[in-house]
Length: 340
Image 1 (cartoon, rainbow, N blue to C red):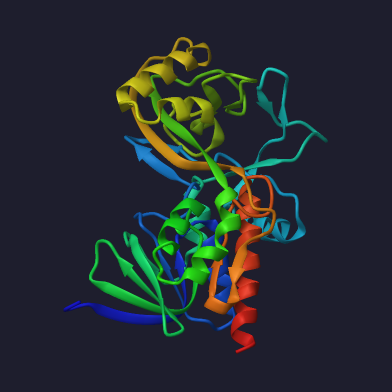
Image 2 (image 1 turned 180 degrees about the horizontal axis):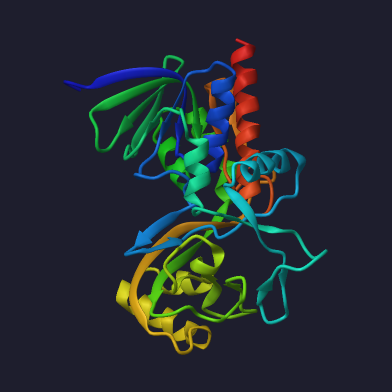
């Protein structure tokens, strides 16, 4: 324990995805000192965008819808800042997307890529990037958080984890308190499906959809295809993101990347007809989509100043559910501090 740098805050947050960013923003407005701990360099979790050469790809969440008033108010703010715009609202029987009057829920795109929303929400928030939480301990009414890559210890009066629930449970199993471990039992029912995101740079613009999105019906391997240039994310033409089905990902998750890429390109060939693949990059999402969610907006244990939130809480696995879960967590934590 020599030369350990120590610091403290009111609320420590594990993860810097949408739920954490929303919760941290609301708590900071309430005057609480927050600290986000994110294992990667970027923000947003599956709101992920990356470059491949001159092209830019959304390689996680591809769009979002709006169904609730609180989220509608937030999205209106994003629209006013030109962060987001309507993309499509209809999928025909074959899975081709289009924007039509008076159809289903609008699907929104993020103009500069999904990560842009996370960057906006993270403005002025204290975030420790590339800080993988290696352990959490409950000692004398405080949480002690340690990190894999850094000789640091963070002390917090409240701990909020928005990491995928299995990762949160793995940390909390070793927290040193049997009461906490026992209380986690309902959360073990939460399950996730994996996904492959294949970013393919083509020699020309594909023609599978005028607006740049296709969701083949009941395909065993391909869930969606998105043309990032038609979407407005990439200035370089021919930047396509191909997402696999969870069943394909489960069957091939441990296979060599080259083998997975070959299989996915073969499966996607009908929609990439006439295009030459110039370069590819594969992203494995182990916890891509909750397939069994928790019925409540989040989970908390006030006696031990602990809460979990994220898109696995409250309903279907939508970006909106992550937003609402973050708001729920912020309210719970504000109430915790106001009652002390």
